[in-house]
Amino acid sequence: METLEVEGDWKNFSFHIAQRQHCHAIASHIRQHDWREDPLDKHFCNMQMRSPFYFSDSNFYGYTEQNLSLVAFDKPNGKVAGVQLNSMKPKSAVLLMAVINKPFPVHQTRKEVAKAQLLQRINNEESIIRKYPEIEHFISFDKTVVAQEYRGQGLATQMWEMSIKMVKAKKCPLIACWSSNPAIHKIGKKTGFEELVKVKINEWKYFDGERELVAPTAGEDEVVMSMVKKIN
Image (cartoon, rainbow, N blue to C red):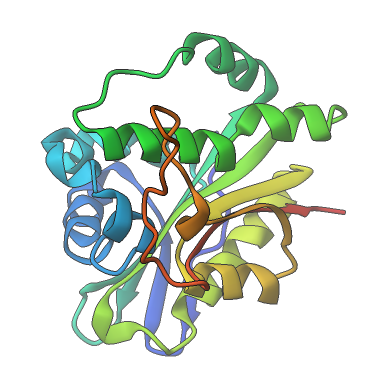
């Protein structure tokens, strides 16, 4: 896939399309800065933290092959300040995976099953294809991770805006994203995304037994949301 010319500087940051040589830095950055404040992980437990494979360098090779993801470096010290992981979802692959992924895989705890069921409700790529039957593929904004010391400077929003420009250059008709991070919800609204599905964490129930609430103590503002943006 052709690499797009989006590398450049903004404020004290330099941006680069993620390449294979960045994978170790990407894995380390996500391991350090991704999981601590996520409401979904806080209430449902973080399955990803139990899997060393999730943070291995090779797990990010696919992103570098598509040339759609970004790494932001602090220019003065060379540290990774932010990572934006994006991937292309072909219609044929989405429909195939919708068949393969049923029923649910085996998980270790009851809460992990509840989390998997909630994510199937929110991150339902098949429903996106059904809602927009005219598209043959879409881009997924999979993960936005900014290091603690660089938050509040607009870096995440800048990575989204640069990613949207890449999507437009690829002539892709749609972008999708899901998150329980309120900062991501704000960025989505700021950059023109519309809400597709929203679930309050404190209203989600177990699908077994008495259908009790999974996280009744979750705040009213703690939600999981999927968003889409059509590209004209």
